[in-house]
Length: 301
Image: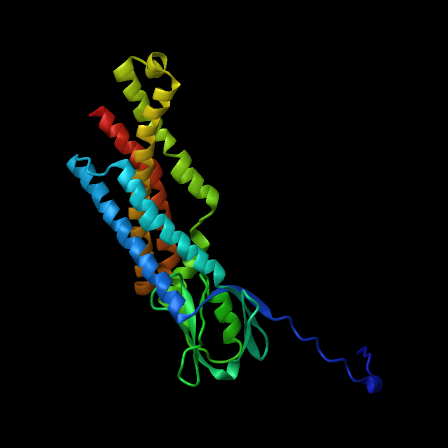
């Protein structure tokens, strides 16, 4: 039996479904261009320092000195990346997709309603910079002012595709690349702490122990002869260069991993997740195991 609340037996209207909400970063062309140029400059700086590092490693030279390299990394890598992070945070926004339109709400509270009939198609970015993203092409032939950076664009594209033919964007290279990266690349602060602060203590301890044993006759020889200050300074002279070298070593393999993942998403989309998983495992094994294996091989020679 049909239960009704309205007079005359008319069923009540169906409730309007809640709009689907997605977190994005909304970039204007100028700000996105600034972020992309900054990221490319950072990549160039990392490649420069990595080339010097590999040259010293294979030729046995010591052109890289800790203080100049650390200063260069701060000025050319850390500060530009922090600038991009601040820009990205300022562009944080939400997209609500309901039955008639999508609504973009910017961080400052500005709200833009985009009817579906005004959208011709959704185009993924050609390059995932400053991250994977989408551009809305309007029926007027122009692009919507704000491009939307969203790493895993598939849920948003699925919601949009229910309201019209918005292009075959889900199969795009950058979309598949971003989806695999979002699922398989972990970037929490404690991962960075373990990788670049705590793990370098292991090879540092090995090298420092060898130095103390050879030069002072035991692991605490310098401490007994010259005190704690001299002992800690010697430890720092091993730890600081190793941290810098490991950072560059990790960046070198990260560039290879991202390039391989993007290439797989382009040439063989079905392999995108598998290649990404293999790339992440390779980076971890080379960083955590390969370095220690090389050190052990050097001690045995």
